[in-house]
Length: 242
Image 1 (cartoon, rainbow, N blue to C red):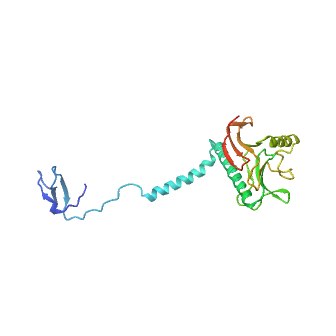
Image 2 (image 1 turned 90 degrees about the horizontal axis):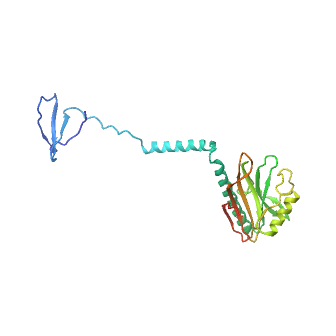
Image 3 (image 1 turned 180 degrees about the vertical axis):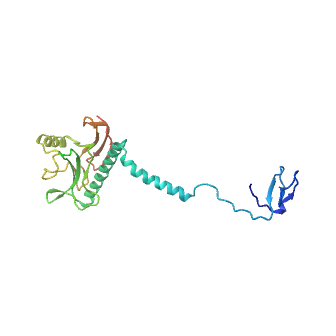
């Protein structure tokens, strides 16, 4: 049975056929076209109003936080779409680091190089940034951002010079066997891309592609490129054949 607290000045007596129960009165609310009868117990304490069933904002936020934590633990284990995501992350990282190297070479007045290598044992590609010191290229050390990056085994990386001079230099390195040497046996790394202190960059493109697990070949449908313009502009784009 429901209860309703009424102001007696707003209600009037009403009668109903049939005997009344002990210690009860029937009231009707005045001022309405259709009057409703309300059963009120007299002399008894009115019960407290119970809170409606539901969730508070704090409880909802707690559930959302727990769901987010669960998603972060489960997502790395999902293989569907993870390779494409790795490709996007790797290309964005290469683009950002290259742009930073170009700006660093310009502001500090020191030439910086980008060197690409491949480990013949693991078949994995990697790249690092070099700095020209006393006529020799040495890896950048003690820098919070410009660090060497190792790519996952399902990604390939290829450097293509942008004009005839650099294409001839690349062809010479390929025929001499000095291109993409084993990172363990390579005595001195040489840059594939140069960021000069003048702000200029050697024209080139670096292409990152996914590798098909079955045949180990590049999947040209899932490739991205980082373009290095001689004017110093470094941009990223999806690979377009031709």
